[in-house]
Image (cartoon, rainbow over all chains, first blue to last red):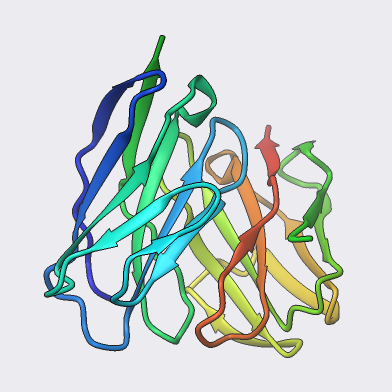
Length: 109
Length: 113
């Protein structure tokens, strides 16, 4: 699976949009971009995934660049409960999730 | 419903004990996984079961022994563990082994004394 690069930490003000970037410059054509988050002491929670089109669900939006070398997870109105480690994972159909370091998002009042 | 249930939530065991972690899902998923997570580190894959057969073992020491009695259950048998094996053990499942979203349980916190 392709390697991903994320900033180790980010801050966001409560109520504002949180934009979490991810670089995956070696992604191949059949690899999906997945986002998970892990709130302290809990199991990872699936957020969203996409192949090449932008995706939106009730939790977040995923914007994938046209060349697919990077993506951004958008939490439109961050709350204190969104404080977590966010993992961007590139995964082929082999379905083995390999977690990188992730981004620790701190939402502040 | 995307629920994966793990028991116990917390386990303390001695180095000579034998214990088991249990995982259950009723979503009809045919792939199940064990991950290990040390403090402040990302989860690391240990085992993958596909259609009740072990398909991936990431060079895990034999003191960890997985078992998949049926398509809904996954066990991790523990024997002669070391203190450095203390970690959060995460179970996960997906519809199949190819291209399906993986859902995680809340984990079992293991402390080896």
